Image (tube, rainbow, N blue to C red; front, side, top):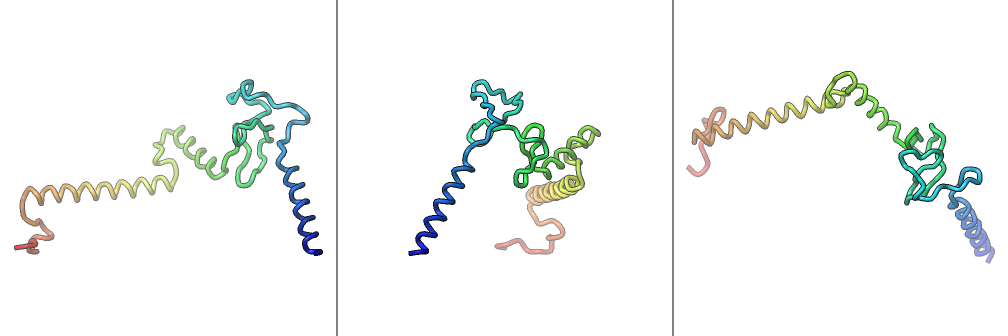
Length: 145
């Protein structure tokens, strides 16, 4: 019987805490603008949140989980670093596929694999045109002969 009372008290306490957290905070008594009045290009002290709710803007640098609040909204710091690498490379006149070391390695690998596919395709066309196996397979017997 005591366990049921304790469980009931814990449930009431958790419901009371959950309702206090679900309320949307406003900026010190200020009322957010209506959705028609809100300008997303010039948000000011308000920002759009989940489900189109207008929420108070967080200060820049505030961490929300793994995200960080920036000038225009929440962003991933690692993704931001990649964007800065691309921006710097483009301003320096480099191609986007040569922006960072990882991008250069992937580009080189794709070019090598593409060249290999092209050479193999040309070899197959010559084999079809000649009608017989070409070196290094010329010593083999074709199937069904």
